[in-house]
Image 1 (cartoon, helix red, strand yellow):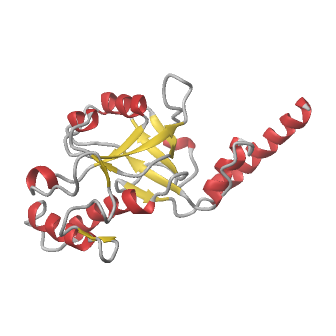
Image 2 (image 1 turned 30 degrees about the vertical axis):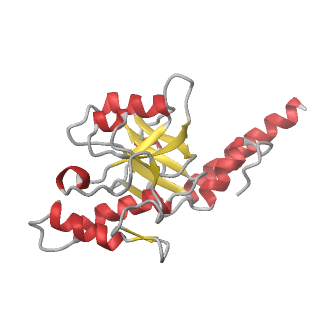
Image 3 (image 1 turned 135 degrees about the vertical axis):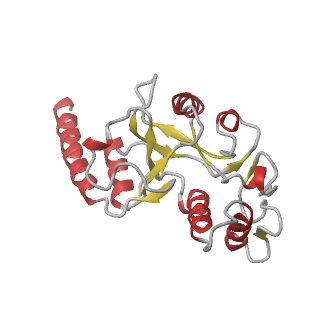
Length: 223
């Protein structure tokens, strides 16, 4: 995927979508003023994800506040510096014991851990998130790695949302450019889980080809 500033924006977006680097993402839901929360995310240029109360209920601090989450910075036993991996199965088991102790299986703990893992390791800078805001679905481009921090404006509004990534929102300068999920092709609306990859990006690719043709035509007229 080309990231050259000389490449037209519509072409760069199409490249991201056609390479299947498109994810659906839900912001905080439970006991949160979602309007105020969305405004804070837009103002600071971030998206956040919950640790599902591991830090508060389970006493699990995955890393030092302000650090980028990586196998080198995640506290033992949740990180393995020798293998260069975060021990997601250890995190899942602790979440199962501390957050979902009455569940007969590890399904809920596994889904929660899977969402965190996708957010931390599955999404790369340059990937596009379709974020479910109160005003609709708004795209943003991920710009940085995951930072672990329990003392941000986001955690004040949504206490368990202590991991964030810097993003560039599509906006009109004052607010995110959001559209109703009903206007998007099937499969591009709200996510069932916190984050999930769009399984079939082809409908959006076709739409972006039309945008590209229009942009090229306008460019030829201007020349």
